[in-house]
Image (cartoon, rainbow, N blue to C red; front, side, top):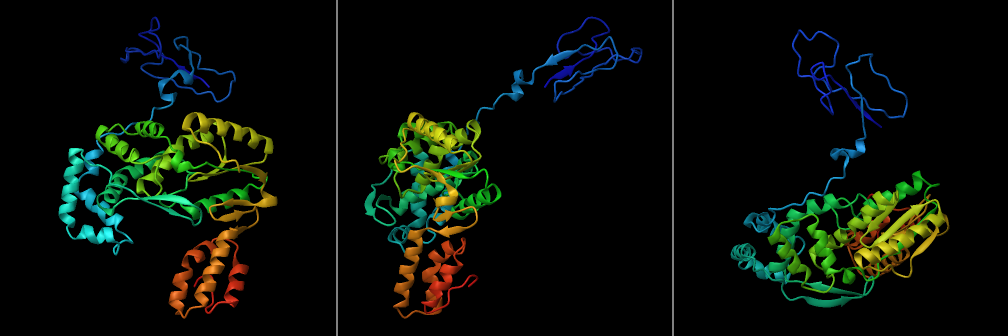
Length: 408
């Protein structure tokens, strides 16, 4: 590709690059190119021609040497902290944080002195004296064993929501389109829809699947690396100080914090960009630390796995679980985001189907109205209606008090 610039400089010697002619009076009656930039772009390397004019000078320019073709540096954002600690934003954060928790002890306690609490929090943030409260740590065992960190509703949960009211659109703008965890309009069903579309429209290109999971992802997130990643986008010193304090309040990134899910996505987002833009991976899907890559060549996936393993270890200090797999999709299906995907159909994951059946059996032993029955099975119904589960639904309906049907 080339660019051709040409003109005449006062009908005499050339004036240099992008020659111009300042002599544009009417008496200049020749056919020179006067005060004119002639641009010609060559998409293919073929002989090119100009009008026969001795006064036209030819300069071949390489686009790659121009600043406008160089990769832009990411713009770092400042002046965010005042927006976060404003009283209006804290009131909005309080309204969002309390959704679904109106009867919880923390919300009831906060509401006894709600307005004054928010004013005090505003002053604390403004003065830079906010400190994370003590965590209540407990363990859950379903669907698997996890250590959960819980903070008080006031002030911590309100502060986390206040931060994300401002930072959420900034973070989401960095994420690739193939990141689905904890992002508005990009949840489990959006991920499932994209996987199904890739398999159905490109069966020849999606014959094999590489599936990996990060070992102890949240506890393994390195604080120094996370802070460096935040500084690639944010330059507000007071905000960075607040985020650093929250990050350092626990080992890794604590499961249970509202901010943690965004920190986790940010931690892997440049890995996503590396795969999509540097490695040219077309069929890539990530939900939290669960990753699926599709390709037609099994050997390619083995090579890509080694590169991914090296990148995660060297740049993020993360380790891939030993249960990583490369397999033909047609033989096993892809177990991802609660479903098992094939080229022709999608099934519900086995353990979700089992929990659905057990819940239904417990409900059938009680005396419940049809309305209560539907409310109790809603979570499993939400899974079932987005896959090929009509046979399962029909079978369960025969043994239940009320009919289970699509569209009910």
